[in-house]
Image (cartoon, rainbow, N blue to C red; front, side, top):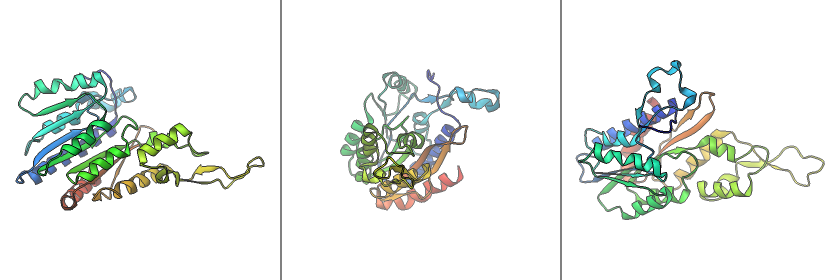
Length: 282
């Protein structure tokens, strides 16, 4: 049972994309001598139901309880994952994930109550030659740090889905002036350095009587922020899917951008077309 409703129609679409990729991924690799891992960095509770914004007759059975990504990964049919790791920092959600052990007693499931930015690099370091993994970075907000993303890319063994919190980042980057020092430090950790986001700001075209120098204003909308993050991914991964999916809320404001990146140069030749096809069609 989910105690804290969350999500919306974009959650359903996000999970449909992931489900289709996991089915394709395991089918392509089932004849290969790899140990297949599925890793959820923000495991949640295993199921989800929509937030109050979507609780109405207009959404029909969408209001029902739905399986979340941990269960989707556990229910892959063609070639099940050999091992599954669910990382969740929140104690209540981590406890809910423990129920999966009794529901799937024959599966190799590890559940870690910890910080994904600590646990994921540790997982990456321990991967062996014949290990391959799909990692799903699905944070509630801006928890994913660039060092974690880069650790995934360096393995050359992981395909990674990243849900980028576009609305949260946009709010951290006001249009009229640069962010506060606290927010600048946070953006540095998300983008991997100030130079990767600060160039989104340009001198204001308007100079008031009291200004000695033009103010810095963000000249780019959320799409520009999304493009910049894609460029960062391309700088460390073997290949990034050219298509990304932007999810919007009920007011049509962009909330998240879903990216796919492959760390293995050989595997990317198969993984990227599959992921890109799914992103374009679902």
